[in-house]
Amino acid sequence: MCPQFLFGTFNDIRDRCDIAPVRQIASEPGYDDGAIVPDENWKPISAADVEQHRADASVPDGVRIELVHRPLPNLDPNDLAGRLETAARLDPLSGRWPTELLGCTTSPGNRATTTEDPNTGRRIGLHVDNFDRLPYARRHQGRRRLCLNLGPGPRYLLIGDHDIQQICRTLYADPDRHHPHTTDIRRYVAAGHQLRCLRIRLDPGYGYIAPTEFLAHDGSTTGIDQPSVAAFWLGRPPNAS
Image (tube, rainbow, N blue to C red; front, side):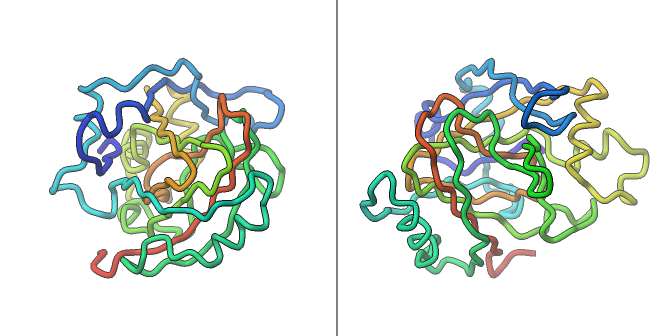
């Protein structure tokens, strides 16, 4: 299944979404060797692509992406402490379902991808999370991650157009015995399989709910001079299976 977004019409997403192929990093400063990143040849998403990624009633909550918005207090652009305090006080879903604040990260501007390996300080590119450490067959049942951009600058959500179960089915004769990992995304691209990347613009106060254990993803601040603070929560709707 390709990533499925919950939105209304083409006009709701047309000016916020681009698409590009990916490339594999080799010996570039600040990155893991083998990391997968967009090649920066971004093009506006077409109406046909939008329809391919529209979530209808048949798409389970656990595998769809929902774009969300929460009003933010007026904060000085340099007030990092105020943004962290905002995240600590905020109920990001206004009680729809319980969430656990994971923390916040500050991303400088003009980064093709933002997530770093805390052990090495190098950026890892498109990846899957492993908070719940679920095997292949249950990968779509992981908790959802909610991210909210607290500003001051905008940022992007990057999403690969094939999910980790698709990737593992292509790579392995017996994927049920496999535990999906970010290295599978890298092996998939290294083997010559096509992967494209969607880029969704998130202005301050905007964010997403996404199955980040199921979808290759990252953040980006390409072409944006201001830094941004992203707050992250984990949760699961009460009726999720």
